Amino acid sequence: MWKKIIISIVLFTAILTTVAFIYAGKQNSGSKETSAFSSGGITMSYPEPDSKISNPLNVEGKAPGSWYFEASFPVKITDANGNVLGQGLAEAQSDWMTTSSVPFKTSITFSAPKTSQGFLVLSKDNPSGLPQNSAEVKFQINFQ
Image (cartoon, rainbow, N blue to C red; front, side, top):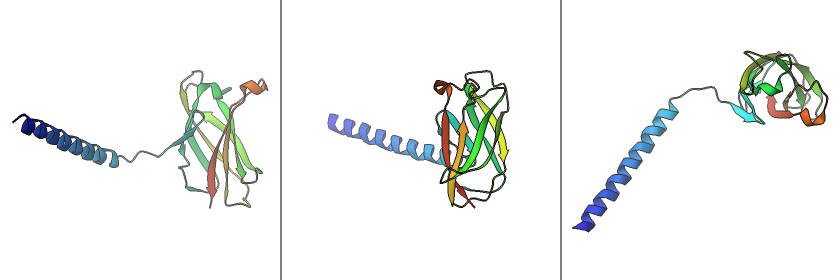
């Protein structure tokens, strides 16, 4: 008798768990949030991973407040060989004097690449020039 009760409880728990996972999967699959990728405290919301970029490149994301100086930080586009094709400044979209993430935007016009891939390079603004205050994050990009 105890055996039947234990088996019934185990089966009920297994069925309930399976239903919960299926329901959670359906809830998440309906979400159409902008896919983002991140590295080194930077979260990019545009361009999206593996997308082909065009000229000019609009860039959006979030960076720690410590990356900004006077509400901006440098951004550049390079080809796969490291040649700089374009550069500009990412501008804070809210109060940048914080340790929290701050949204940024920029638009960068770039020269015609000679490679099919390159990098979007974001650099922590470092007016002191001290190496311990510098940081850089590279995101691979694909040219059209």
